[in-house]
Length: 123
Image (cartoon, rainbow, N blue to C red; front, side, top):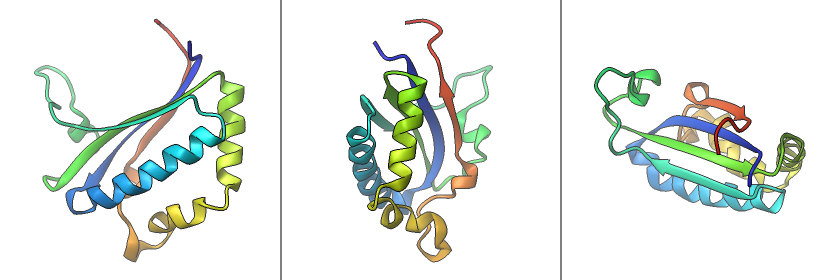
């Protein structure tokens, strides 16, 4: 049973969704090689529930953006911290994050991503 997850939600322009998927598939492999037990990303489909605030509203998403929700599963917070250190040092990562650091190649705006580490409450 997993004891820690990193969770995130972000808007991705629809015209970049295929490229984002390709990058995310590689990122998933990198995280798993460095200690993640599992890596998931899903694209929003049914995002409105009356009486609640929706992810598109929370992220100020535009009509031409998809909402991606994901989480990475770790054995513990310590395992997560170590995996994140290793991922940051992985030589494949610079090519994967170029779109984040080069505005002309940006496939999503990381400043609009919500992220956090979570410990179990109910399992």
